Amino acid sequence: MAWQEDFPFAHRGRTNVNRRTWAMIEAAERIADFSFVVTQGSYNKGGVAKSAGTHDGGGVVDLRARDLTPARRGRAVVALRMVGFAAWLRTPSQGDWPYHIHAVAKGDRDTSREARAQIASYLKARNGLSGNGRDDGPPGHYNMTWDLYQHLHTLAARVVPGDTRPRNSMGQLCLSYKAIQYAGVHRAMSGVWGAHRNSAHRSIKALFPALKNAPDTSFPESWMHLERAVHRNPPNAVTDAFSWYWFVRRVGFAPPDVNDWPPRP
Image 1 (cartoon, one colour):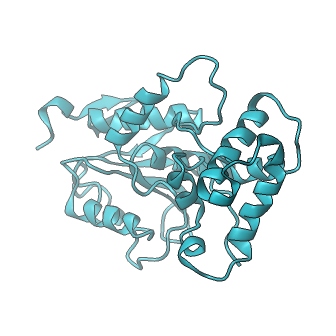
Image 2 (cartoon, helix red, strand yellow; image 1 turned 180 degrees about the horizontal axis):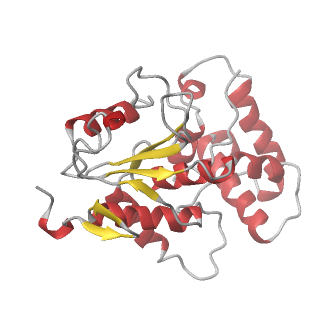
């Protein structure tokens, strides 16, 4: 049975989408900045054989993607993942189906056994298909949940006016590698780029005691220090952990929406 407070309802001509799932879809639409078209909802037991039982319970939707540009397909998948869906772009090369986006809402108490197996696959960075291949979507949001998204969204609304420090679409303080790289060769900056540089400089100084007293004007040198630590040191406890996500979390920043940190050689 569906949750009483989330009893399935009709929206945009589609039935059997509970209110929690639809709230997540609407949040993802705001991030992607366009409306989705649901081609198959939830609670559709036996409705589509190719779905292999994943739509039998709640929290699962298929979205039309055949008429979307590659850029919009990517934006939709990222947005769905950012609000707590396990989501993938399904392509004709993977099965007898058109381009579509398959999304499973993590934490929905009505999901079927098959859908829960797909969530487990997603959390292991796999594609949720029978072959259990590698995840072919944008990484970085595996641990996001709907509750966490709402919490972060609430925090983002409390940002003090005039705070121009860089933030991702969740409102979290973040750092982009490209911004650090840009800041590393520009001493005189203002506005957002200046905020990027100052935030990055404080973060790098927090990581490396040798830079503790370095003034802001020495940021290009501290940036080069970071480059050497990441790319030139032999493997050790620091560089092994020195992925982008470790870096930003270690100093109190969240990952940016796009992980543009280059892989270690």
